[in-house]
Image (cartoon, rainbow, N blue to C red; front, side, top):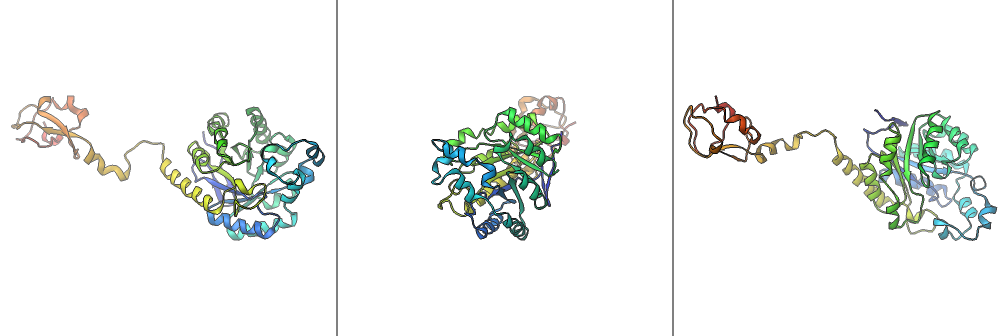
Length: 357
């Protein structure tokens, strides 16, 4: 069964193509258009295929009143010095940046798309994007799923903090309208701790492959290092999304757990090496090992002098390297004892099939 093929501008995302890497710039622009543009070019230079942003208005994504009335911040938000509403307000992208970001991406030859977090942005961003990202937080917002699906563009669906029932429901809603989908395993703990590796659950990709056999698989990851990414690619993921920053040392909600240009480039290099190593699923003698078939395999050699017309016996043979073309192989022992020698042969000679009658 062939999986879906996603076309993102001139790039093809499929099981047979190299992994597609999305640099999620998120809030790492620090409220600066120029930093956002600089990050686009940095991401391209580091090897990213796409620069992804997040279009939202604080007042349409979080409730200031409810968050303010909560006694404590939860999860990664504990590290935020400002209120949740203030952080989202500062992280939001001004709409008038959009065309400038699109233009910068075209100049850098990197795909631009975004995760829009309200109906207005879902509609307004459509003319600028070749694909949509749906963040994990909106996987249960059916109306948004339907609205995005109706745009008939490829969809990257993150599945963090979701049950398999959540994923099945979202998949069913989307694919009734649009089957161009990538399902991305995700863990939404953004603390950047090594201990989070045990919660990434890459083996969920096996479950996704079984339940959604035609879907492209992906990973939206927030753990340090490259192990999650390399494991996901090994298990069949062909889309990888990681946060991207210019520095892990600056203050901000996303900087500390993001990949920087150096670590991103390393991730790409290791991933491309892995893709080469994964190769084909067909077992065969490869071109670079054909000569070793001869020098490392065993073939029949004589333990005694044999005269013409003498019959071959097992006790006359030993099996040693090399195995020249046409030589008698160990698995052919029971077959060769039915033959006689055509001409005199000496101790140590290799036994070739052309020497037998």
